[in-house]
Image (cartoon, rainbow, N blue to C red; front, side, top):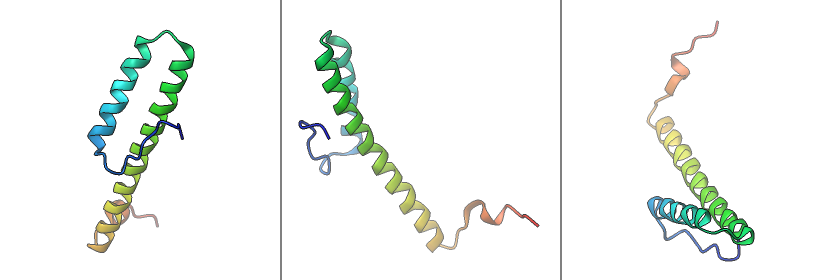
Length: 80
């Protein structure tokens, strides 16, 4: 993780997406390769956080569907 990466637990998904957008704009505004590298590192950290949150949401959704008796596509596919 980047040293300037702050705890994102208190941020919403939209706030993280806004940070990614802002950092991306700043990346293209600067011509300094070192600064661009640091911004890239921060953007990657925020994107990983978003991916992690979305994966957790998908797993939670699947678990709730299984608890409710929904099997998704499993009952539609018949291999015999």
